[in-house]
Amino acid sequence: MKNLVLIVAIALISFTVFSQNKLSTTSGHIKFFSSTPAENIEANNYKVTSILKPTEGTLVFSVPMQSFEFEKALMQKHYNSKKFLDTKQFPKGKFKGTITNLSAIDFTTDGTYEATVSGTLTIHGVAKEITEKFNLTVKGGAVTGKTEFDITLADYGVVFTKGKPSENIAKTIKIIANLNYSK
Image (cartoon, rainbow, N blue to C red; front, side, top):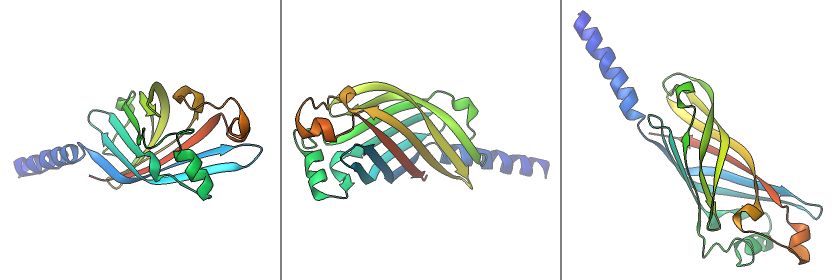
């Protein structure tokens, strides 16, 4: 009987570890927001793909840039144009990184964990190293991830030195991501 209990316990632990080898989503949500004297600009994208490998601590995001939706059609047109993000030439934003404090996160125990993630964020064809907080919540075997951070557009080659865009577009924008991972 003791051997049977031990075998069942090992099988459950192995199943839990194996089944969480890769978590993913194809419907993650990323929002960006900027505030300027002229108006606030907000866009939402619900087609974000992300893979999280709990055992390795790797985290990857792929963001189809043309999938951002704006309140005003003209904002969306400007955003996708060659003068702004040129989403035809640069169709995806990407992040590839690692959870640097992986030992502080227990993907098998319900709770909220603050991960530190370091990696490369690529937007508009420009890759930059970043380190940000990524809050992970484990509940009933499900994992959600949330982060909020600012980026400076000029760091990614999006610069306006004259005309209305230089006055009406914020130099720094807030990025907010919410992801519900599944096995």
